[in-house]
Image 1 (cartoon, rainbow, N blue to C red):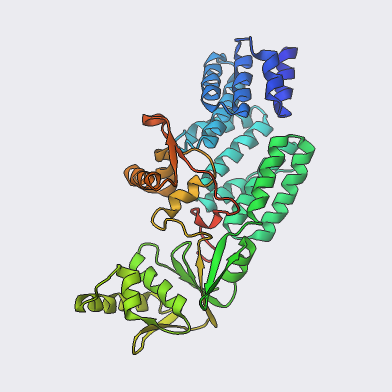
Image 2 (image 1 turned 135 degrees about the horizontal axis):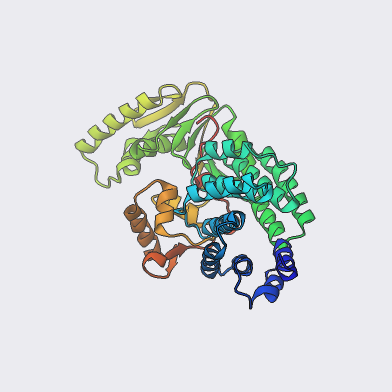
Length: 408
């Protein structure tokens, strides 16, 4: 490797893409093209970066397997940043294996980080944790150690383990300072801000207040009966009853919990569960049926007793009944879509469909509805169309992303 290539690589490792381009911008050999691709990625031109890396991978000879594998890893990172979740995980795994076989432990570890970050993004937390456990971070240089600790923090936050998350972020901040790469330091600071922003609202006895992530963690381990409107579940410290696929039952459970310790009138329950404006006997009959179903679902946690004017929730073990709601009153129907878009990145409808586990047409309809309400915006056309929205200032979307809560 000649001196210009070495100098450009060192500039990129130090977070100086312009310095790297000054050394290789006019060269068309494979190593220079690969470095230009990485530099363009650091400057934010992801489309050009991806094209250059593919060109470099084709230009490397058959004996340069490590160089080709590094191009694959870099392209996978660009795909992840672009929220193109359809890129080949098999290709990344093959590249990682090649790097490990040739002793390139740092880039192999980086490939593993990308695998874990993708799993984390689409909600496969258990798999992400198992994959991360295969890595020993002790020999990593500061930049790689920062990436490792950020992934540890991401898993901990989705598990609602805030002490573990803060410790990982402290280690990440120390490693980022050692790396002396401003972009890494900024990423650590942005992630740390999540722990200091409202994550949910607590509604109890007619009052409400904002909760930080660590307060949510404490609430879910307390002796309260929690109607979790972030995950559509009812839970206490020992038992979780999911109502994610039963929206009518969850609407009834939330209405009853907001009325606790009193009862909820039948007319109010009908309006909340069915949107009924003019109540007749068929509505009342349906309410009795749905309350019976709710009674059976909540039997381990609470009873639903009839009163003169409606129904009341009576917890079996808990001393308090509360509602854990989203931090802001956003579109309930499309909350999951908004949660992903709130990271400020641009998403394709296909990537959102993959992350949400929904059909692409369902996601497209949600995006069109949100666009009509001016909550999201798009750019590009056809397959190049991307959707985005600026993140809500001061609010974290951790509770809205797909991940099990403790006890799930």
